[in-house]
Amino acid sequence: MSQDVSEGRTDALTEPTVSLPVVVRPERGPAEPSVNQGPQHPPLRYASGRNSRIPGPVAPLSPPPTGSEGRNGAPRAGQGASDPARNRAMERHWSPQRNRSSAARPFTRPRGRHAAMSRRQRWEGRYVRSLVLSDLLAGIGAGAAGFALRFGADVTAYNRAYLWVSALLPVVLLAVLAVSRAYERRYLFVGTDEYQRVIRGGGGLIAGVALTSYALELDLARSYVLAALPAAVVSVLVLRFVLRKRLHWARARGEALRRVIVVGHELSVIGIARQLRRERYHGLEVVGACLPPGADGIEVDLPVYGTFDDVAAAVELADADTVVVLSCPELDGAAVRRLAWRLERDEVDLVVASALVDVAGARTTIRPFDGLPMLHVEHPRLHGGSRLVKELVDRAGALLLLILFAPVLLTVALCVSLTSRGPVLFRQVRVGRDGQKFRIFKFRSMYVDAEARLTELRHLNEHDGVLFKIRDDPRVTPVGQWLRRFSLDELPQLLNVLSGRMSLVGPRPPLPTEVAAYADDVRRRLAVKPGMTGLWQVSGRSDLSWEEAVRLDLRYVENWSLSLDLVILLRTMTAVVRSSGAY
View: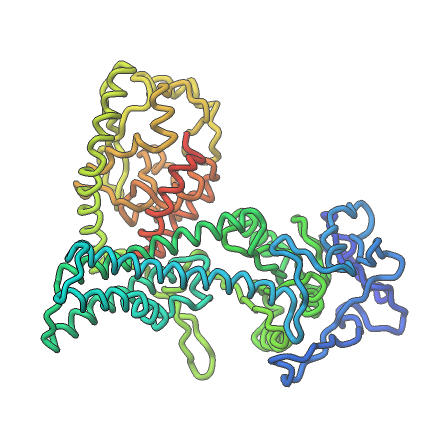
């Protein structure tokens, strides 16, 4: 599907197979270089700033083409049947007015720094200041709670020292979190690294206090230490989770986003653009692409800013602050290094996407080998001491939740028994770890003849995989609709967790008929215990496609950690409240 490129033309990307907006270069004469050599443009003019002494390479910057300007002198979309309205973003970038982005308020470009970068640093700075304030509040609250639980409200000569300790706890907590690098922006905004560093810092603080009091023979009230320090760590985790959810909601509205230029081949650009648009909480907004010479075009609605030689110019035109380089043979180590030099002066982030699929950073280590960096990938932790800790946490958590939810369990059981004929609990055979079968317990949400009626409803299946899901299932009872909406029918599975057949967090427990239809890759889900909740449940549940559900379950299997389990459990609370995809 490629097209011929003649010597007298430079618009090799202006006639894609799928009509898309592109940035059109001006026509060249016969004596000018061909398209593969790159157009000759004046170099970029860099403002003075922190990196002004770094010698800057010459980077092409395409001026607006003659005769194709919009009302603001903006480059229009391509030729032919392309819709000019699809390139409205370019008009905004060329507007003589103060730039307005969907990710921030109007801004003024500071000297020596890229405008989009300065805008991003502003909201990132506000977020970090919010973290510091929330951690201070957590320390103050934990210190006050520990003092009140141990000594009450009276201040005496004996407990006056603990009053000073409670006042110093927020400061010490901030210092410990700073040493644990819990405020570094590379670990914030998304992922579990932030929570892991908080847990490590909090555990180190508790261990340090215990060792210091033992070594110096300090007479510390153990009840105060056991109440204040764990409460501080838990409060920090909860408040940080709330702030992150607030950030994700802002990103869903188009705020606090990084503006990204994607560099790579068409299919790779299509995949990353669709994934980032679907998962906006990552905070990456793809605003354009640079394709290899002679590319046919892409199917997503993205402006094409030229070839790999035009990346620096694309950053200026699209007002981007991040460049994502996908895996492609044309961009070797030397080419990526030169691109990094081009982007360094304006402090534009360069991200090189790995070809590894759903492998977390904790499993990868870069090790030098004769001057060549080698990416070492560790095997997932499916056995060992960490799994033993997970077993203990699962069973202790299930027992605690059964005690806490006992009134809810009794109420739901009474409602089920009074509103429809049949048993209160629904028992069904599911497949667990290593293909072992077990009986799962759920509150009955359907009529007793639901299994018999499955055949006549099979043609109404709304799911694209081996699952059977329909939104208005006539087999569901009126009470069952409410149980499914708030996932109350899943609570008896705590008995399965307590018996060791299931886990609190893990892949969805499949039916034997579903497992029989699994492909070889999908069977990897059976390497761990199924869970009451998981990435699939907190990411949309039945609204997700089968391929996406499998990808999320495999991501969990490959990158399991206790901190990831904690994040999923916290996200489960918000997913239950939203009740999206629950039917």
